Amino acid sequence: MFIHTVPERDFTLFYFNKNDSYRNILKILEKYLEAGPTRDELFYFDSDARLITPSLTKKLIPIVARSTTLRPPGSRTAVLLGRDSLYGLGRIYKAAENKIFRRPWVTRLFRDLQGAAQWLNVDEYFIADIVSEYNASRPFVSC
Image 1 (cartoon, helix red, strand yellow):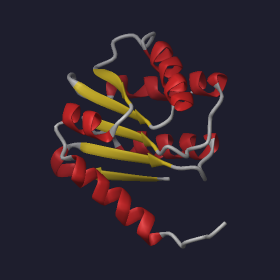
Image 2 (cartoon, helix red, strand yellow):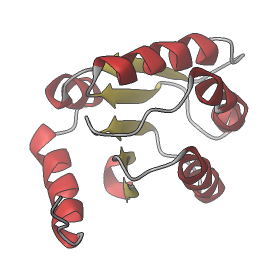
Image 3 (cartoon, helix red, strand yellow):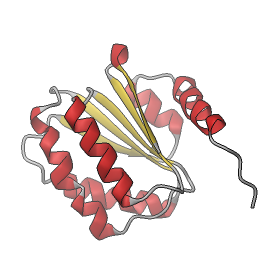
Image 4 (cartoon, helix red, strand yellow):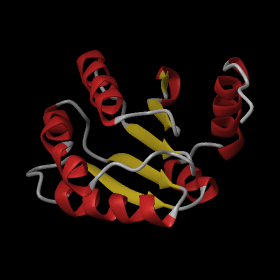
């Protein structure tokens, strides 16, 4: 998992893979909110990311709701979910998020990087390069 903010684009990429836990997601969201969120966000759940339960997904809402006063109107959040099971959790999250009052951002779910990047007006290769650099810096472990 990592978070990469690009201030000149007012954009933040959150990347989650199979080694991440709910506790890690909470920690990274807390740090991000303390630093001040960007206008556009991409939450990229790699296709092998571990599942988070529906009840834990809903528990993210109070944390996310704190950003209603921190993000500017017209902000966008793209959630990229590579597997059907993850996409289902994304739909649960989005339904719960819709209950946040005066939310200045729009959230959309995506199954592919191209669609998410296009909606956010960010080059998909720019995002892919950031993820590749992160993955290349991690030690290789064979199974």
